[in-house]
Length: 243
Image 1 (spheres, rainbow, N blue to C red):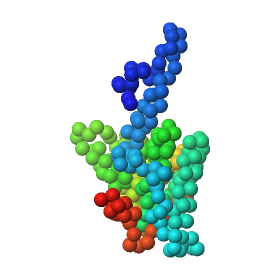
Image 2: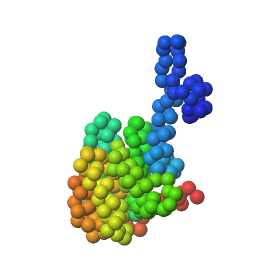
Image 3: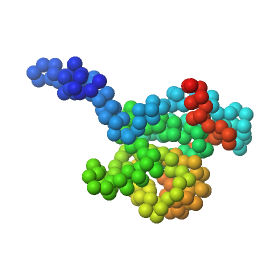
Image 4: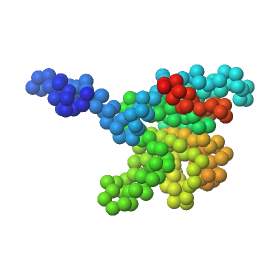
């Protein structure tokens, strides 16, 4: 439902009861959520991911990690993400989350679940895939671009909650490192929660970025681990199940 098609308010967002009284239309909340979802930059498929369809069944109950199974580690990660959402919606400023693990371990699903729950609660979220986001900044330099670099950077710096997906083992130039640092540093200084997903462990961040970024990320975020066996890929399993 949108402002143009709502039969109750005719797109105004309010319903006139009499000459001196009006009330918000029921569609206004849906309009706000739809607008927040669109401005999040999440694709339609990512907007379908939530905590309810994050299945723990894909995680082994037998393989151990520090006396815990992969299932138990994933269950703890899910609980941590739920509490993060709860704190954000309660108006608190929790530490961000650094969700890490192998490719196909469910990192992006958890990050999207966080984003979608926050949007439902009325918070503004920006979801960026880091390599694509950096390319977007570069394209802003081209003649005729709809956005400039400052606008793109400011959105990531200022948004209520930022999700940085796939801050992984890529080749980063000094230019890209400086952009990432500028975003993370601003969000730390202004107490803005940030969720990062990566296939890098905390101690590996400095090997691909640099120590100043690694230091800021460890200050900004608490680690959230997801484990799957070396030869397992949950994304591939789901694809096979649905074919």
